[in-house]
Image (cartoon, rainbow, N blue to C red; front, side, top):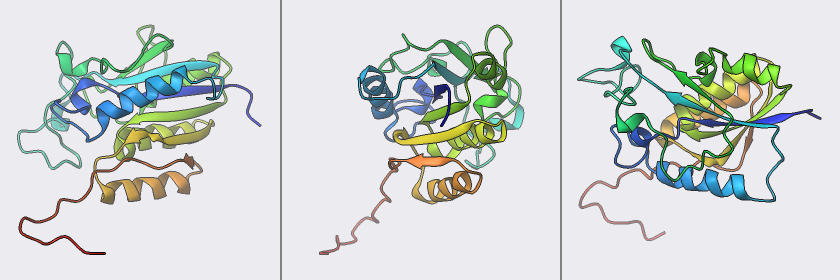
Length: 207
């Protein structure tokens, strides 16, 4: 049994929600769902709640005018723009620290970030006696995956609460879920993924 567990909210920012420059379907719903979860009397009692955020200044090849959506992406979460702010439906009142990442290079894991005081996420959690984490946020198949896998590597008992995440695509989320399980992440619930588009003119299946 773990001693103290923290909730890590990953990148629930405007640019990753509907209307943002790198929107994930269901992002706004995840913001609302996390807020409802935090208000629920039935959730675990967390010793700490923290958040991570992309805060890009000039991340080099992470931004591209012709992105491949694997290693390069359209500009997003640029410091000083509304896109870097947390979604307004996310209640931040219980968040004790925010860990910004990716200023001058690509960064997917919250464990690559630091707080305003210069603490890394790992150091901050350890200093607060945390030995287990629940991870939620956006996107399941990218920054949630990277954060959860790094949490295991840093020695934390790690769960991803998939009902409070949103994924980019069915293909990449399947790979991500397998990768997380392979390193010992416990998956709880199911991830929201966009439905594949049906080609125009193709009849719906009657089954």
